[in-house]
Length: 458
Image (cartoon, rainbow, N blue to C red):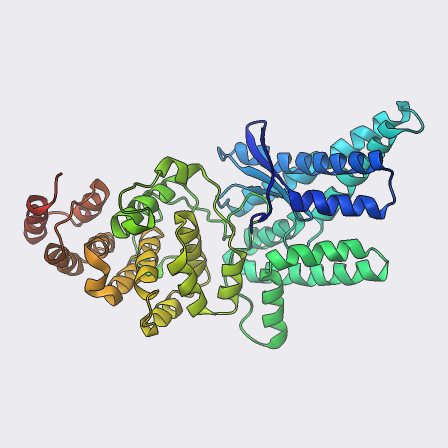
């Protein structure tokens, strides 16, 4: 979730920064509780903002080493570094560590300098606050708490050691640790830490859902669900393999249905999704406009904690409705990615099959595009079959592309014949590139020739 309140926006070391009004208000309230004088309150707010910025800059510079340009936001009770990309587990651990490993040394450096400062005064107070906030925030972030760096580190350590099957146990352990630390904080009178844990838990519920399912005897947590973005991730499972421009995992010769679901990790996959979305459902970008693909590659992905909750609750109709109403291409791709990672494709298709409302066609079209780009070609074709003629020529073209990527000549031929019946349309270079993967085929070549002759070249 991004800050809903307005804020102060600027660039720092080339990174876009937003300091939300909610962050300033909460920091101000904490300062007022300490009965500071007027200028002391201002000093406190500035020190906290600077300290959290230092922490987030650690994450941002770490991400920049992987050629990712993140965005920093101070909101609520802390900060967030948003990249819109998913990192492999090992890199995600390093990025998570970068924040505390920058902030804590700053506190140590101020400790060294402080003895040379005046014994009292605003400068000394600022030094004390810098030590307190940087040291405290750094240590708290390293604790295994859901939504903080320590929770992300511990979950990814399970994935590194055990593999993807270790993600759910990792989430369960983080959930247990979060609950234990929250209770311990109340016992020792450090209620503020409990409030922090509750706050971040609201936006990162996966560990608690996993823990609840284990305790209630149900399925062991939302399988492979990505967490709401913490430091430098996109709410998804870190994929060790990059995607090529069509969404297929390199070196994977199997069909889309059997592939391990992979989160979108590469900018070229975003571009491929944007191109396919415009071709299949042009109304998403406006009838007379085109999508800015360069902007799509650069912009951080929106955070979707509400979708995480829907998938964790297995509320497939709500996911379908959310998918149908969403117009931001990155959010559409994020929703489909979550559905794939949560292994809810067949359930969502079932919910859409039963849906007779206006949401059915747009949701299926967006789902079809997302599944194709994510390499789930069989599932993408299943969505196309449900659409039939109501999906239009764009859906039929994408079905032909998915069939070609899956090596299904018969299905590709039938889809191209439907395109001719629904056309005329102009095949993109990407669509032609997918279809020619099938190799020489006289019937397909004839259909492509007819499509070229009927295409509108105006």
